[in-house]
Length: 219
Image 1: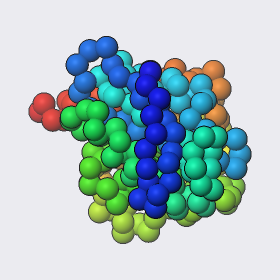
Image 2: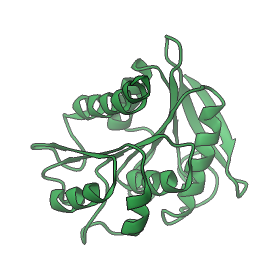
Image 3: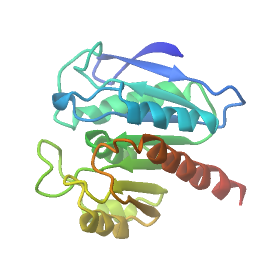
Image 4: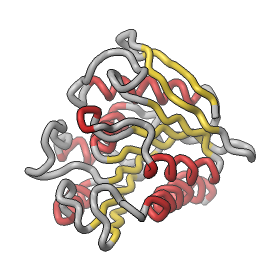
């Protein structure tokens, strides 16, 4: 594990950790964490499990803290300035590995990951876990306009539990229907936090990345 810092386009220094695979690197990945105002950081069992699953599949993975979280400079950016953080993280991890780049986000981080992917052509696929939707999801920017989603022609995983109040399954399926290359995966009995299902969720993300970025290219 390598500790690292990197700078955003507006001059903030963020902290992160890079984990490299033991075998030859095939691609790179960035992991975006949950809401900074509700205890979110890079250090969570679900995100650790996702990182491990991706490293095992040959990704160099950067987990980092958004601005204002723990050792990262700045202050909370209302979910909009965090897009800059994610773009800077993509810059950093792509210096470590050739090949395709995946952006992963959970909850608030899924919202940031989606909007970052829409504006960054270097992102080859996105995995969005428990994307906040609906009236219960407060303090998170709204989903981008449908016309923007319809133009996004890269693979997207939409993963959620069927008991998640912040990510209603019907609304998630509606969003998935507008993304040209979306895969919607629903875990029965799982909630917003995937308690006890962390490895299952991580395997779903890793399997998606394998199929979307490597099998597709091989074919």
